[in-house]
Image (cartoon, rainbow, N blue to C red):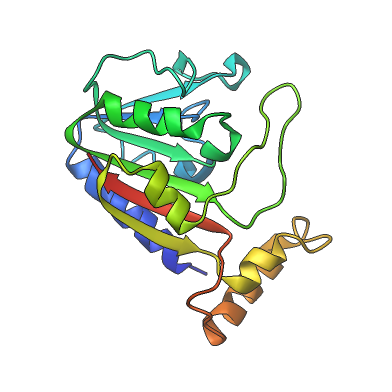
Length: 198
């Protein structure tokens, strides 16, 4: 089953790949993890660099999102997936993402809102959750901000069900169907996908 937010993310990533020569994946660890695990072919002609603070994740560059070790305007695009909730000062990291982008560069990210606590002791903490209003404020230096909901009421609530993660292959699509049948458009969401331009 394909979810509507998958189309949004993949369309934006395809647009970025077609209009970029260099991409920085902040918090990406080893290249092509998380949601990018199926996108290697799409990005094969792009200089793709991962940065992570944890050397055990085997990133291309070990560094801190609060102080990116790159000069101004180094990249055509910046990606981040489930990273900003783990940053102690996400507003600083947002400014850093803006700084390392070339004029007109793109940012594409996934950030949780209604989602369980998920720190990993010794590697990263879990500090923040962001509403759409919070994201617009956090990335206010950017222009043309688009935000796509990822998971409506049922999916957001499903994350907290006992045993959900063990049975998510079955429960995930079922909850998605419930969300489509009862569309609470103004409801909270599990995640947001954000696309913006410098």
